[in-house]
Every structure is written in C-alpha cells, then in structure tokens.
Amino acid sequence: MNLLLDDMIARKRERRKELAALPAGEKLRMLGQILADTKSIVATPPPKPANPLRLKTRKAPLIISP
Image 1 (tube, one colour):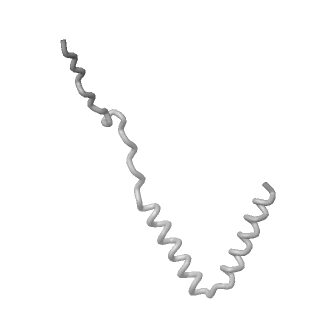
Image 2 (image 1 turned 135 degrees about the vertical axis):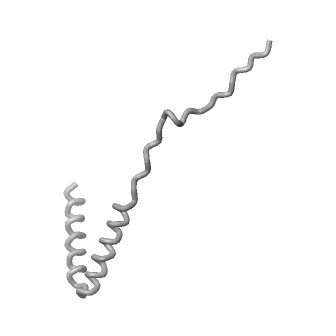
Image 3 (image 1 turned 60 degrees about the vertical axis):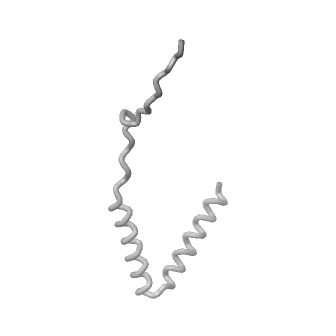
C-alpha cells in the first residue's frame, strides 16, 4: 500500500514540475479547457430514473385448450 502512495505522490510532483515549465499562455489555455469541460459536465442533466410502475411487461394470456 505504501508503494502505491509513494508512486501517486511522485506522479503528482512530476505533473507539478511539468505544469511549472509551461509558458503562461499555455497554462491559461489549459485552464480554459478545464473550465469548459467542467461547465459541459455540470450543464448535462443526469438521466431520469426509470419508473418501475411504467415498465410493466404484458404477459400473454394463458390459453388452455380442453
């Protein structure tokens, strides 16, 4: 478990260094893209839950021949 945590922390540090090395314009473009993606996620309403009362299946009548 400790190895996974150390790996996650190392990846986070690496991403932070990569982000710091980018020019300011690129950082602003990335931030704008992140904000646009977030807004599109928030603007998309979740699907309505299915109403089990409306999902009744019709059963064929039982025909018994004499």
